[in-house]
Image (cartoon, rainbow, N blue to C red; front, side, top):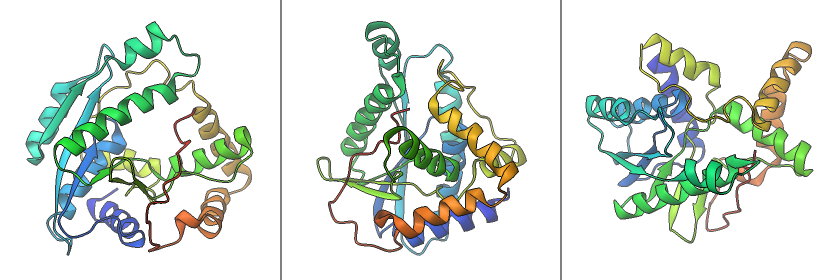
Length: 253
């Protein structure tokens, strides 16, 4: 995936849902995975030509896993000249050792989200950019449908009235395979997966289900995404987001 193609998809999402306004200060969530690193490079490139001026910082939460490489993240941000704020947390200890959660992803996500929100507010950010890609949108839709009986996925833009911060997801039009290609084409370093739950969650089951369905129904991804855009109010282009934030269930599995 070329930078031009990445920026085309990213800018389309940003424009469709008014994700960036003049003088925004945006905190980019940096986990070290392919999606967050791709998003970081996209925002840095967008700064050079996007008609609305905005500032960016990067925030990373160290959950306490053994191989979490903060130096790799610092080197990436130093090269791009993006300020990086790293917060050490005890998520790994709380989730796996103290609470011994059978379904740890939700609690871990909540702990990380709280730390990210605190740093973003401290640094004067009004928006937080999350690296959810197109696959995440579809997998969350299936999780909601099959496990809760509800029709929904996370929103492109979510205003959190308690903190006054807006969440934006500029990679929602970018398939996971494209972020993989971007990383490979540009020979970018990526942090190895450090969470013991990687590849074992219900979300992974949905990923495999989509892969299997696509063999039988080639248009399944486009059909699902079309259904989301046509039927979910939060996916209407250029809507007024107001303060009607609804709790996300994207990290329950």
